[in-house]
Amino acid sequence: MTFLFAINPVSGGNNKTVWEEGIKNYFADSSHTVHQFFLDGKTDEETIRQQIDQHKPDRVAAVGGDGTIKIVAAALLDTGIPLGVLPAGSANGMARELGIPPDVEGSLALLVNGVPKPTDTLSINDGDVCLHLSDIGLNAQLVKHYEQNNLRGKLGYLQGVVKVLQKRRLLRVSITVGDECVQRAAFMIVLANARMYGTGAVINPNGTPFDGQFEVVIFRRLSFWEILKLFWRYQPFDPKKIEIFPATSVSIETHRKAYFQVDGEYRGRITTLKASIRPGALQMLVPAV
Figure 1 (tube, rainbow, N blue to C red):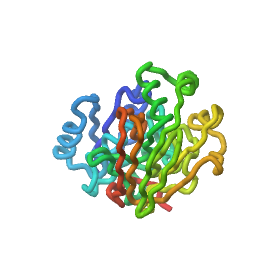
Figure 2: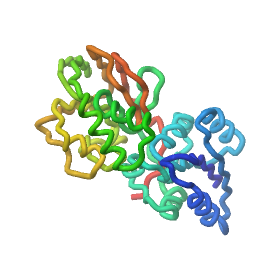
Figure 3: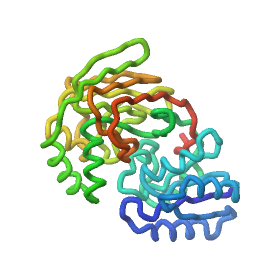
């Protein structure tokens, strides 16, 4: 087979030499063909498509975190080319969801021996792609603070939590799922195509990216310690403080501009959010059962 590796050299702030060398060593005595290229954060979409057209790979691997996976996945939607993951980022939530080993050799073995599985994606506001989790409100504000202040690690998250909590405000929202419209006051609304954030915090216990639907998770109350659960592996959230609505599409209106993020990337402030499921739009490589 021909493998194409899209490497994000800055993902997670980690040096990718270990992964590059691991790829070379793993395939050194192999009959497979391997090509590597680097993402630059500027012309990635064009570069990925050029590389695919040039090498016509059987499988493409994203070497990085959740953001890297999303960039590569967007180019592979509806192509039928399977996407593999080498979890080299600071947040590897999608890799956890898919059961991908965290080490170089284990994830490469899965890339070669894994089976393609049709995986759902979300279409957000008629253009953006979400593989994992998007949200408006408090966590998106934290993502913005984290990005703006170039924070790193769990200590950086803790600093962000303290800062954001000082400014937390309830959102008044109108949420339409199917024929049902509900009015709520909430700190955060999550569109969840999976179970957990990249840190391992479970936010949607019964979620899966393979069932043709997603969940709208409404956080009506949030304490300091519960927000920390977004970034530390504690128990699932108190079901008395959240509501979960299964959906194939949703429309959300907010009474004021709300912070918004998609797969860990801050997108700005919005008053309208529309999303719909795209069942099986992406082939992801998962462990053979």
